[in-house]
Length: 342
Image (tube, rainbow, N blue to C red; front, side, top):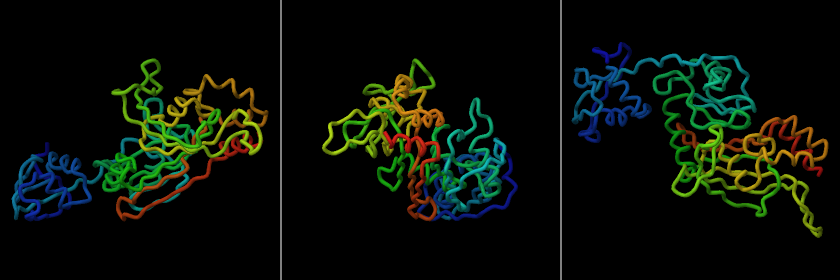
């Protein structure tokens, strides 16, 4: 812990009756509304706050009306990951956030086996000094992720305030706000119902740690997916006897956002995603029943046929309702075209 306040330009704040009796960290969060309470606790412990001219290092200390607080925020530290000049499809960007249309094959965050070449590395290079620091580190704020081989829309925070606001919306799953996430999926077969809800808890599989698995009541984490049948291949024609669907196009809307949620839920329903080697391996022989053009398109896809097509949220700074749509990438669209001629 520092023995002196951090040397940087500071801000003087006066405790009012509204903050009187509150903890030091809570009072500061009320007075300096754009900084998270967790970040302020860190700054207090590092010697960045004085109470009536005396260093205050205990976040739980109570304050009184008329107390003078001197807050000195340290400059954001450089991000641990390095910036890399990786091309990005930027859909929208302002001082608070950035919306990216992520290509398949791009990992979102550095991790074991993917220490660089990720979306985070690309964003550090792209955003540069406009990243004001998440938790005191100059880095992009990841509030949700897409699998490496899933394409589509992703929003990332550039400031601490935006990170707090977006994280709160994603934690709420859009139940009380405008958060909206819709995915397009090409699956084997077709659900009997035109729409429905899959409510099945998920946890890490004991047999294969790379997989998630549906578990019984009282276990795992709540997971809810709403699905709608958009297209059936071949189509069900009026006046003709129903034929078996080889595949279908499904829209999935998330009420929760668990790892591999759509992939696991659709497999659990009996309709795994085309190209999904992890959750649909038992269905790969169905590819032999596809016409040559569709088989070639599926081989060219080389991944699960999943695309994050719609993203909506409330702007965490302006309060504006934001809405973005992304058409499927060429490999997905080509497979869809080939299936449509069945």
